[in-house]
Length: 325
Image (cartoon, rainbow, N blue to C red; front, side, top):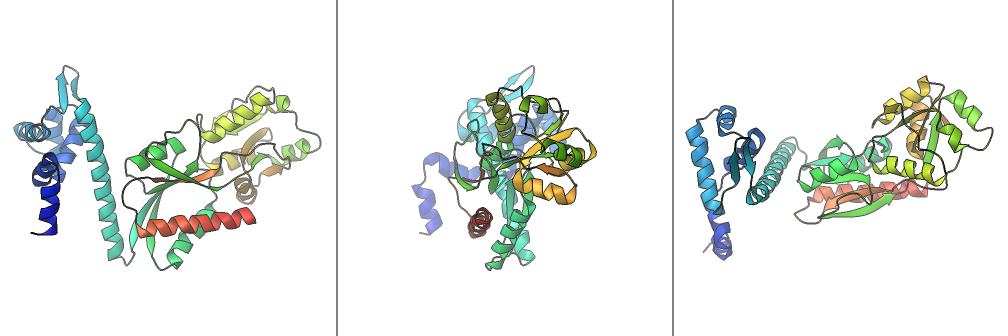
C-alpha cells in the first residue's frame, strides 16, 4: 500500500470523501455564491448554466451533510456551516495563489515568492536591507509588499493572503492564531514646517497651544493614532483634530513642508527621512513615551517556507543593528 493510500485510509470518513470528491472549482463556486448571493448571477459570472450551478451546490451540500446557504427574498446567505466552509475555502485558494507564485519564482531562478504586509510608517532602508540580506544567504526570493493598517494586515495574514506582517502591537488587535515578536522601539518626533519648528524650539512645548495648529495624522483607530490621543489626554490637553488624515509618510511630509502652521508626530527614523525628502523641520523635544513597538507577526499553524525563516532572521539582525546604532 502506498503512503498516500495509507494516509487516506487513516483519515476520518468525511476527510476521505473530501479528498475523493472536492475540487478547487467547488471552492471558487462557493466564494462566487457568497459574493453574488444569487445562483443566476453566479452562472453568468462563471459562464455556465444555472442548473449546472444548482447541481454543483447540491453535490457540495450532500458532501458536507447539511445546507451551506439559506435562501430568502434578500438572496443566499451562508449558514453557520457555510461560514466555516467558506473560511477554509478562501484560505485554500489563497494558498493556491501563493503556490502558483512560488512556481513562477522558480521559473525565474528564484526560490520562492513572499507576501509581506507592512504598515506605512516603516523605514524603507530597514526593509531594503532585510530583503537584500535574505537574498545574500543563498536563497533568491521575490517579494510583494502590501501596505495597510495593522488590523487589516493581520486579518489578511490569518486568511493566508500574507506570509508575515510587520506592524504594531495594540491591545485592540485580534491576535487569535498568531504569534508576534518585537523587532525594535521607535521614539516619536514632532515635525513641522521649518520656520514653525524653529519657533517651537525656543521655549518648552505647550500642548494646549499645539492643539490649535494644523495637524496631519494617521488614520483613526490605529495604534499610533491611539497613542498620540492618549498622550494629549494625559497631558490635560484636548487631542488635536487633524485637518488631513493620511497613511502615507511622504504625503504627510509634503503637507507639513508646504504649510507654516502644519505639524505631525511620526517615528524618529521616519522624521529623519522626511527631512531629506520633503524638507520638514524636526522639533528637538524628547517625549516621555514611546510608540507601540514594530513587531513581526506570523501564523502559529501551517508550514513556513525556508525563505520566510531567512527573511525573518534578516529582519531581526537589521533591527538589532538599528537599535544598537
